[in-house]
Amino acid sequence: MTLRLATWNVNSLTARLPRVLGWIEEHQPDVLCMQETKQSDQTFPVGAFAELGYESVHHGDGRWNGVAILSRVGLVEATKGFASAEDQFGCRIVAATCGGIRVHSVYVPNGRSLDHEQYRFKLAWLARLASYLEETCDPGDDVAVCGDFNIAPDDRDVWDPAAFVGATHVSDPERQALGALFDWGLEDLFRRHHAEGGVFSWWDYRAGDFHQGRGMRIDLVLATRSLAARSVRAVIDRDARKGKKPSDHAPVVVDLA
DNA sequence: ATGGTTGCGAAGCAA
Image (cartoon, rainbow, N blue to C red; front, side):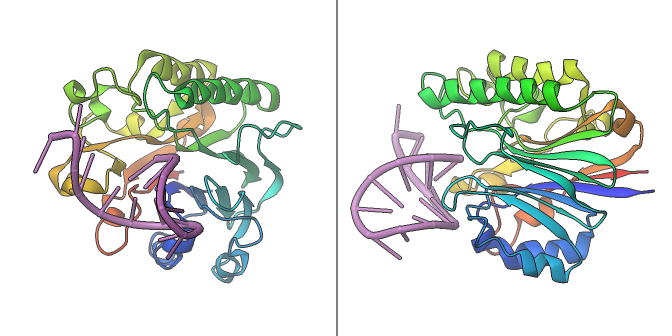
């Protein structure tokens, strides 16, 4: 069975709902992971997605963060957060089994700068993600971890490596944390299909960065070996970054055979 | 260009 899996940091689902609905109708994802909904579970528009044929799960506190999964191939065994009593990690991960795949929608904290406490929080969150996957999943199963990682995997994924020396998103500890996920058994599906650099998923709103090509590839679809073997196409829809009131992120779309 | 923009919420923070 073919399956289209996508991830998109929508930067406020309240502000973006018309665009998101239009994008879904045009691109027909079977599963869509979203981040930064900035909504509560009460305000999340379950009905609007149901009208398009999608079941959904949302995990949000209403103001910051907020993650969701939409699926039209079934959505069962949903879990919010790291599935334990802890809640100091914020509303940054939600998981569900969709079409036989254990899907995770993740919003990795923005580290801000290497000397900021949010950077240490980011590394702690990534370590918790690794332990959570180890506890709840088997790399031999069909597992996908999709979302805004706020990490550029390598220097091909930033517009100018020289501009990022000493900056967050590219530091060794961040890339090592991502490497731990690769070592566990996940693969970056966009990179599986594209060796070239300069393909980005995020551009700052300011200073015309999108039109100047100053972006980063920080939104990723990671998947275990069994899913990677089914991957036939991976693209970043930069058209979705154009026009009026775009998110600052573009969706990543993967087709599985 | 230590600039610039957007979202939330009603000033300043987060990104």
